[in-house]
Image (cartoon, rainbow, N blue to C red):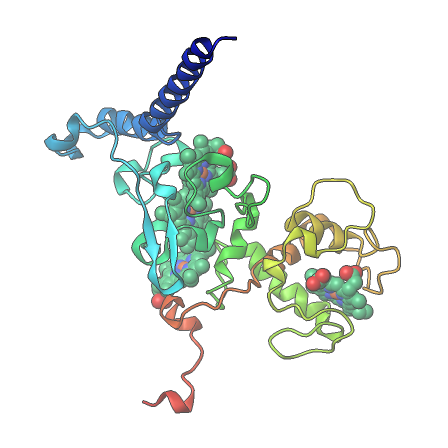
Length: 277
Ligand code: HEC
Ligand code: HEC
Ligand code: HEC
Ligand code: HEC
């Protein structure tokens, strides 16, 4: 091949790469979600949409920070509306939920409850469901685990299974073998931070099924010898509901050191004497 041909071919290749890059930059993965939300809002609540926003199709990259924990969550880039009372009837991924109003996003962000990767702007990465990303979204009933990181008081309507898990922990005397909050024997591992364990830190034996923390906990509760045939942990013959409740409680025991200012007033520990009056 002549030098000229090589030059022309490589120029074409470079141009193609540049065009692809520009197209991607102009059409980021989140754009269509914002367009869908803005279309919905314009149709559903035109009177509440300021004239200046009537023509707007999207609002760009969004982010909220949890300063105390140095977190930056961009989830609202694809999920606008979740804290906007105008969006009470919006499609599920945009819909307003009262729990979001009770925890203003400027203070709580999103990942403190949902997990996921706050900074990511593509779907599997943001949901923590791509390889090499920790903390997959807590889906379905497992989201109740989030509440237990801060609320020590029962939340019977919003987190009934968390409460059931806490009670089962006492009823079955798990502290006969496990330490938690500095109390209990140490026959088995200390359970502080167990809700933040990565799947690769768990013993899977030769099991080949899907590997997530909730799956391990649930199966281990239903049969402590499922992964390690010689596990000394008691088999309490738990039914599905009980195993799920205990799994949720374990998932709530994260390594996060929650700043006092984010704790509900009823769940704040009494101030230590040296903190002064
Ligand atoms: C690039 C766009 C995008 C980003 C960024 C994004 N999401 Fe999503 N999210 C989606 C889409 C699309 C769905 C619906 C499909 C699905 O469930 O995967 C969804 C679904 C969800 C659901 C419902 C899941 C269920 O239980 O069925 C939750 C909760 C959620 N996202 C939370 C988050 C949180 C928290 C973040 C930030 C860490 C986030 N999302 C970032 C696009 C996004
Ligand atoms: C205090 C905990 C908490 C925080 C903080 C929080 N959420 Fe949620 N979110 C929930 C709960 C609980 C639900 C589901 C229960 C409900 O419908 O009320 C939910 C529901 C959702 C859903 C709908 C899921 C579905 O099943 O379709 C999306 C999307 C979502 N949240 C996104 C966000 C985003 C984005 C943020 C940050 C701006 C956020 N959440 C902050 C607790 C939280
Ligand atoms: C990061 C800590 C944190 C997490 C996680 C959290 N909350 Fe809260 N929650 C608070 C704080 C702080 C308040 C403000 C009220 C107060 O200070 O007592 C609050 C208020 C509430 C309220 C209003 C009623 C009241 O007691 O004043 C409800 C209901 C509630 N939370 C439910 C939930 C549920 C359900 C979840 C899990 C999906 C959850 N919270 C997760 C910290 C948290
Ligand atoms: C007779 C002692 C014993 C009792 C009672 C017991 N466990 Fe265990 N548990 C162990 C031992 C030993 C291990 C480590 C071996 C294994 O993973 O099976 C373990 C492992 C665990 C793990 C995995 C921890 C990690 O970091 O890998 C969890 C979670 C757990 N137990 C929760 C519970 C709960 C909740 C109860 C009460 C319902 C309970 N255990 C009762 C002995 C016990």
